Image: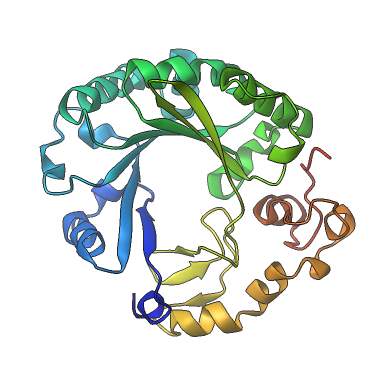
Length: 288
């Protein structure tokens, strides 16, 4: 907090896991973040299962963004990832949020794999039916237990097809070239329809991920330790990390990424690191 206050900046913090509500002191942690003057927006990313019966324990966090993770909005796809019988619970969660948190910001978090590509067109009607403000879609990157399903990585052609679907449903031209620098997308909904927003890579420029033990990663999908807040101030990590220094300079990139014609695109460094073991290698899933 001192670091951003010194820089006269404000933070956007999403608390995720694992599962936040399994932590016995989750409320104290959330209150500390939510009430801090250096934080302009707070969100939680949760599977929502603790919200099935009641949302009352979120009283006092009226401006909190609630983000529900799901790998499918159809029963078969959802239960492929979340287990047999859990789709009914998921739908009850969505109904409960719609009823009891009608004006709260609610987003559906969707991780794209080969196994749920066919669910993408249904995301639009789903958020409308259950009164979500938006859905966010990002590609699966195999880390941890995800290493067991590396075959679930989507291909560049499948990513392009997904982008065309998003453009079509949002009433945009199908020229997807302007979308290629974006690592993820948000589709919001209002009375006028659906609106597409792209998220550029935050690595080394606008964000980091902090683990429970204080370890700092370049982003939450990029588990390469660049320091630990219990040992080193964030200011030093941010300004002196050799990893971040290289990530900020496109000249250190390898292969096609180094000479990419898109000025502000560095490819997905997390995907490059996951697949090749070298975070400076060219993005193997770039559709160019």
